[in-house]
Length: 355
Image (cartoon, rainbow, N blue to C red; front, side, top):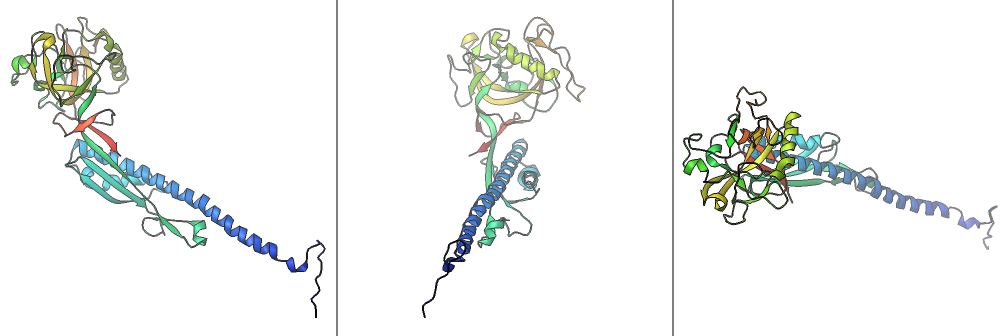
């Protein structure tokens, strides 16, 4: 017997009924796949971003501690790394899988992974992908940071000081760094005349159009090299902006810490003198005098017995004195533009991310 086809009210053959259900089912699978891609991949990106931020913060934070004191437990253990990694997670929870510390190479690398409750180690749950048989995915990140003392880079102010004025003075209270030093001011100094030269006042040849100078501790040249001296008793006129900036910071209660080059020997005299620069030192400035007038900004500022915050020590630069008042400090900077070398004994270190 032949089967008769019937026509539905819509004009469709009865044999076609249910076909749309199959199509919808197929489309739902496709849409579910797109949802898994759109939402679950977004979850993965968000988790990775949090883990990367945590790894970056942990590496920089540990490097700062190591730069200040390589034996600090916050440098040698992952405690600080774990705290910083968790603080950068939206749920306050991440996992520091490992910390690779190389104190000789002055480098730390932190590896972070996901730490979701109920999920396998290092993994995050995927809601839509779970339907397709992919319940979780592992997520991790890593970051490295370096530290060291600057070996090459800029000094914001073109003035160098004798190593005699820095030795054993880091974190030891206020002092006056005079341009024209003498053995009487530094009785233990073994440099001729305390490290000055006839006609020399510690000023360095500046970079063109700038107050500061580019310093390279690995070279020792004469002529126009920045390590050569610039004669004259007064500060360069194009440093007014720098001095005004320091004055504004100090007046507002902020610290004015500057990296100053230190020399350990001098050759030549006057404009032909060359300072052999050996290190950068961090100096927290509280006042200065580079003119014949007291308290005349910008070339004289806070030069009569200024007092450091929380300190009873005072120092002043008056009369014929020309110099900077402040304190050599242990200082960790995140400044760019420096090539790093071994940590020097004069307190100045720099931390930067490592690619």
